[in-house]
Length: 170
Ligand SMILES: [Zn+2]
Image 1 (cartoon, rainbow, N blue to C red):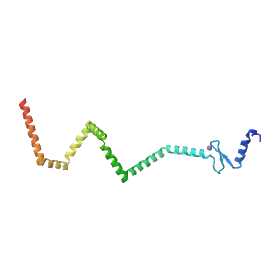
Image 2 (cartoon, rainbow, N blue to C red):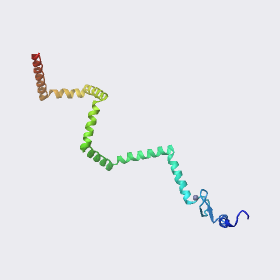
Image 3 (cartoon, rainbow, N blue to C red):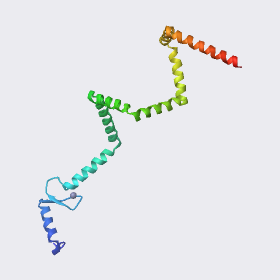
Image 4 (cartoon, rainbow, N blue to C red):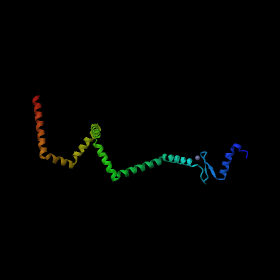
């Protein structure tokens, strides 16, 4: 055959081996591998293609969403385990005991309760709370305690004296 010159002796040999089904030329690169029926790509290309497929597959929105759900479910179940719960509680307790964390919480809550909308909400809540029958009853009982009566009398007396003093000073 004239298509092969003398330099193509190697190629000729390869072509013969291919036609005798001894070897195969990879579809996507120039590597040869031992002939196996139905196998068209070398192992390296096959692995690479598989990696690409997996990457592409994992990028699909529905797959991503499924994976997110699976992870969330796992996390939920994980934190429900008694030994994990116990450990988490302990960790949290220890954390809140640290001086810098305590200080940060104090600072945060101070700022939080200074916010106008929070103040308003708290006032509304307190009003609503004080109107509950069981709370009213509790307050009434509390006020009837002797030491409470005494404290109130003492407060009234001091207030009276203070006002009297103010009037005298005028
Ligand atoms: Zn290949």
